Length: 137
Length: 440
Image (cartoon, rainbow over all chains, first blue to last red; front, side):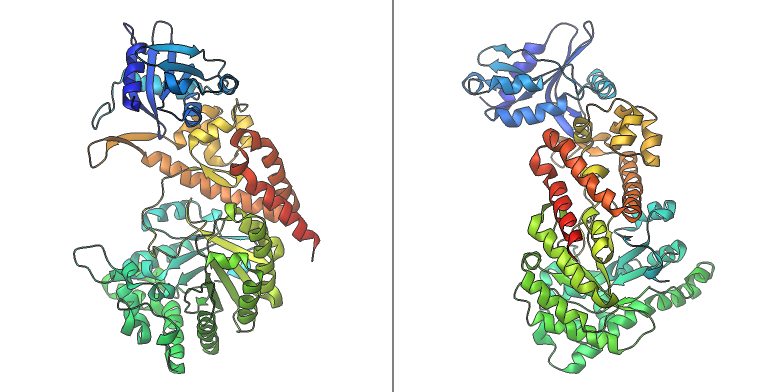
């Protein structure tokens, strides 16, 4: 399973009527793999997709905690088994397991890093649509 | 105008491009002097002269002779025209002698200086270039732009740097050539001070015996002062031995009242003022280290936010992550930075730090979307850097011991957030500088 396939599966999983879902969302020189914003619940989610290296995924996902209400890393099922859950729980980052479907394996926790202005920037970006210059990967 | 007027550590900038000039004009009080590479003078003679004349700061021209000692390929132009870069070709014309004869054809080394006159001629040409180049430019402008001529009268550097070439770990015969060139420059007895540039392989920094040999050879050569440059050495990663040896080297060079500068340094260099370092130079938010290749700096690195307690630049996202407890402007100014730029931009809300990292969307050459810093975020990072550096230097001037203690405080505070590799330098600097301060 490639990272792009994981991204696609997660984007589909997060798609709900009225939800804004986008891949490759730029934020201050970082790029979040998948973001979704539900205007009804006013909830912003961000997901880092990884093929295998969950620790690296966690490092990336930490940056998303600056803007998202809930942050996850997404891994193929075979790799998700190796994740040390307590380490994830400590950071408040959740885990999505991807195979033929996507399921929440570890729920996200409290995010002490969220900054309101960063959140607004990303929501604004989602509302304005995909980035110019080629669109989604 | 002399460098001696400013208190140590002197905060000197290297002019990278003329696009940076507006920052120096805007914040004249944020620095003590300037160093300009001779190739930039040749590339933009009138703009450089006009800029220096309006700044009213002491400056030096770096003659960049070491570049002619490298492989000719590094001086080649990438343009269709080919050949040597125009600015270096112009320099070679002005330096004449061995340089003119061999530049662009071979790496000029000690073998090229067969006769004593080869050495003395180069010393004379290079010193004369630095002391009189702006007179020539003023004369050219007198005819072409008389209204701009007035300010250039008497524009003169605070000293001159003797011709120099790179010294690697073998040290000889490059060391002998360099000290011969220095002695020849000193023997010209110009009114202005003569400085030596010690352009050294970074491996030398970790060999105390080589440092002692080099310092011993230079201190007796009659120079007013020294600038050292360890190729691509990063203050943050030189470790315990590197800091110990830097202290040793600065002490050895500064004996007998010689002025000593680090040609590419940052916060650690400022702290070395306790042991005899007069000052350090760097670029505008970059250039606190420099590799001898490429000789022209390449593209300016993307802006980052300088974090004063960590003595390092970081992406804004990292800065926001390391300070989750910072919930107000007051917290931020107390913990991270209280400079005028940060106060204006944050306006009480630390979230507004994002303004230092704003990007805009563009496409790369393959049509893929990329994010590049906005002009405004670049400007903010640079202005903040200048003010933060000025404050850092002033803190060290006012209370060196307190500045060193703050390294330990920052280490303890951020080691769990950032991890040891990111902040280990603070611990090393604190430990080694404290220990060196106890030993005379």
